[in-house]
Amino acid sequence: MRYQTQGTCSTAIDVEVKDGIIESVKFIGGCNGNTQGVSALVKGMPVDEAIRRLKGIKCGFRPTSCPDQLARALEQLS
Picture (cartoon, one colour):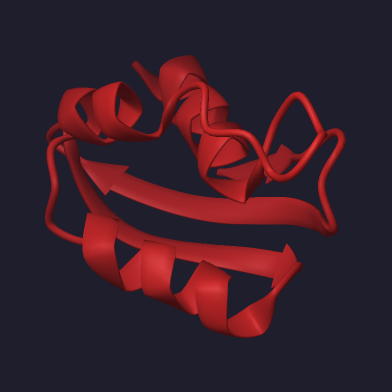
């Protein structure tokens, strides 16, 4: 699934989930090291756990962040 982000430097997130477990995440754009780190950390994690951990994280003064946008994408899948 491709999720179009809003309010972040990344423009989209490609997410693959199977049986409620995150198989892969790829951010399009954004801070490369940070987005790679987030992607590696959530791989193999249950969707509900990732949402719980990432939802509401802000980037500076922005009301959202790349991790928060990932949580929103995962909410659409569950």
